[in-house]
Length: 267
Ligand SMILES: [Zn+2]
Image 1 (cartoon, rainbow, N blue to C red):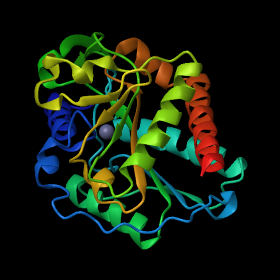
Image 2: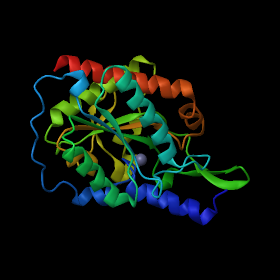
Image 3: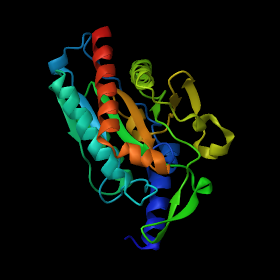
């Protein structure tokens, strides 16, 4: 059991440094310098198409804490690994899983460097969602005071208008959102609500749940098209259990791989 102080530290770290409910500190300064676009190949040849599947956060700076006190990093790692395997099995042989270590903020720049140095064609960052602190309720789990919020659930997709391939990124995000919707999954609609405060985002596609988040470093500084997927909420007690299930993980990984396949065909 993690001591409470460590849990709180984890929560604070996740709020400051994670994905859309987080990363705000980094967001303000991010991407002032627009990266130079790299010319992507006109056609997508599956075996040569370089996809980076980024595991959100690091073992040291693990992102959000779930309702049952499991770190987000583990959820991200399991799902990103599955997505990578799925993409490879569908013929995207040049897909790589990116695991980054160290502290949160430097790790964001490391990810961008790896993607840009490796001349990635596509960057997909995998995360799991939480809620702002003020929305947290408390419960007892495993004998310890723990935090949850059952108010919101669902996945969401984020793209940055500062990315040099914004419209391509948006296209891919929409395809992923469409595939997830076809699996009967719903998106997290709260990001457009006032209750989200500084985490509030512009909804670019209200049908499949794509939001605009310009400041995210991994989206704005990558020279390839880039999408961040919040696969589901792990602070929601029911959804956390679903995100832990092999069925849900397979469903999401399959949906992402199908979307990337479609994306490639259309280029
Ligand atoms: Zn995250």
